[in-house]
Length: 233
Length: 388
Figure (cartoon, rainbow over the protein chains, first blue to last red):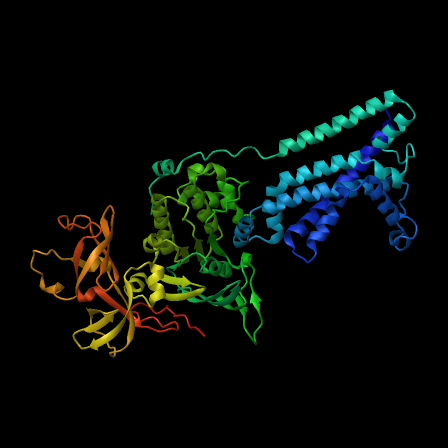
């Protein structure tokens, strides 16, 4: 078992997942709350990483993070071929899953409930924390797990922009590729098993987040009238 | 001091232009009208959930909304208006118990839970405090919603078709609750419905809304006995509306020409030739037994016709009769009456209309006519809509 690669993968995934949560939720909120011209184009661009080949994403990231890019020239962000580059690649591929799922969950929250909270004296922030977020939590969490799992499994773009430096930038998927290339199958088998187990656990968790079947009304209206104490006062 | 909510707003909503003016005191005002008339939007504007294009909404001295030329625009956010809003869809927070729902507006206050429990108890729900909303019936959910709105201690309560999804018996009990609450707390209550039975069950005053405007506003009975115009007649579902011309006007009576049919109506200060809208009260129409002498009161307005349709009800039967001139008249009579008359479709029938059964509303106008003067004894909170 390649422990440095495993630990680096955990580190990269943890940070990427945190970033996916914050960035993804913010984008999902904007997309559900704000209508702007060209929205559908923006939404499509956000989804592109889901279908683009990893090499294409990797190439775009090379352009964005390589010499001559404003990020490098103006902001002095030099991350190419370091592990933070792997985080960036993971975030880019995990984000669409998070945004898709949490956007659907946020849009599903009945605006009447938010209006009710408004008339009850709640600030928009309190409504978000107490009403919107709790009601959308399943979808948000599901999106986060899927995005995180995708981040953990990121391979192609990562290889292109953070490279394959054992102990420095080599994540678990890259290490598996490396092991197979070097015909270290025992190593590869173990790592493949670990990856499969993690992915399986993640998907199982997502499945369990799906809402349970609706319970029946406990009482019929006829029962209500019967057990109801007559109007007082 | 009695509080007053004053609304004077305009808002374009697609094809509809909302143009509402009304004043409500500590009473229950029913907004009645067909769906799409702008009733809900009016409530939303009051609650601050929708922003009108212009106008003003005030509760006594407090300005909720004001957008008028020459003055600073005010638009108080919904949370600062403290208005109780009870939605048709209950709108309970599904992830909180009944108790937590009621305690929601009390957050941060000491003994919030005790107070919430008290309010639930008042709505006869204390025994269900720890249920989740989906474990409650519709009526129970709506009572939790009322308790929750009460927790915010509103002066104004808005009911937006709140009970239209509920069974009649439960609706009636909720109406009792609301009337009791209103009287106790001297609340200003606006109650939106498209159901006339509900309007009668709860209302004191009635505003008839159509196409974004208030056609008539007044005491319930007054609106019914003296509808302002043909549109109000239609909205209220009053049958036997007719357009006629005054043929003769004397201190004793008015003689109307309804498409060739002459009808005697109670006297009114109108000139011959005036075009009027009138209606015949369907329950004031008598059927004549061919073999019995007529009483003197029905000595006028004898009409010959043919039964077109007969609908049997539990308490009353409905009869549609076509008069010789082609006019259709709806007759309502007690289920126990006229048992011996053959009233199947096609049967000839004779109707007698008392003069008083014909209600002449107003001279017909194309513009919105002003409502007839209501009894001046009723406090004149009533403001008729002005139309530009």
